[in-house]
Length: 395
Image 1 (cartoon, rainbow, N blue to C red):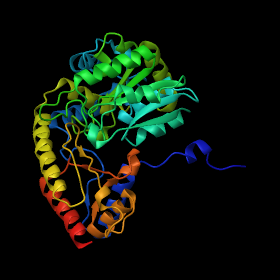
Image 2 (image 1 turned 90 degrees about the horizontal axis):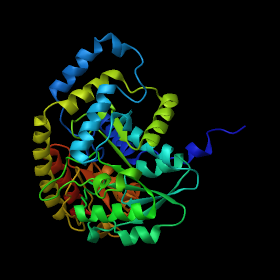
Image 3 (image 1 turned 180 degrees about the vertical axis):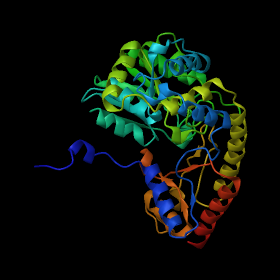
Image 4 (image 1 turned 90 degrees about the vertical axis):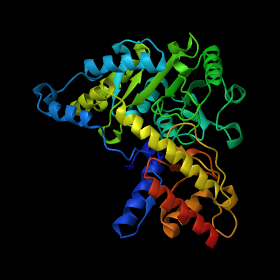
């Protein structure tokens, strides 16, 4: 008799969660560790959202099962938001409320990917994407980008990776982990290529409002007229509204995809927690004042982090245009006095010797880099990066 299934044995633990857990373990032992790992706003959920959840707790209808695809009023709100922000006119029937953005990614892959299907995955990529593809039986095909290209994939690269088994492209802008934001013209080129090739696009738009400077978000779902027919949007309230722990996301897609995703969820989890859905509804229908405050802080911290990273010998970084991550190259620190041959080994040294937690590039399919979040206080950013600089100086 066997043990754990081979399918789950092959799945890796989330590297961002793992590094955060290690940092917390060291803190519990009394060490002053600064964590640049997990990407979540360091702001509380806005008060009007929390109040909506408190009131929802007292509503008897929320004490019972509700529709698997989500509260009707929340699905309507997501449809309105999708039209406003992504430029796509959809109905509530196109929307499935999911257990966080991760739930939406897994449902989308389950709905679209059959065993053996190939999924184009521009790298660096978020750690969860290849695992979601693998659990659906698909084959992730990384398409590498570089700092010199701004970590943006080109149509020529996608065409070179395309085969007759290609079913899906996972497209992310703004990007986790790089902060890259694709200009509207490049988004349209990629959308047109996907439509001409007849492949699906899964676009993760959870960082859509987190753009800086002259960068602007452009949805691939509305980039060309024919795109929406084979596009699935995933998003959620986690980043914009500082609601990572509330676990509310959504999937927006053609009716057959939304229906398939809903059927899957009916067996996997049933409805998302009703109180969290009520909070998400308040978030979508409420003001963005708290977000504007967060955005201004993230922009300031982005510049601080990039300036300080650039002052560390052996580290090279470009300013991210979106999300809340920097993705510096650490190649200049490898194979020398630091004692690290890989970015994975460097991350271990930084954690145990400098007491800072960064996520190594290996987790994102791009060795030689590291991801750091700037969704943290200015003081912690400055302290942590000064520790890194001192570590390099003493190596």
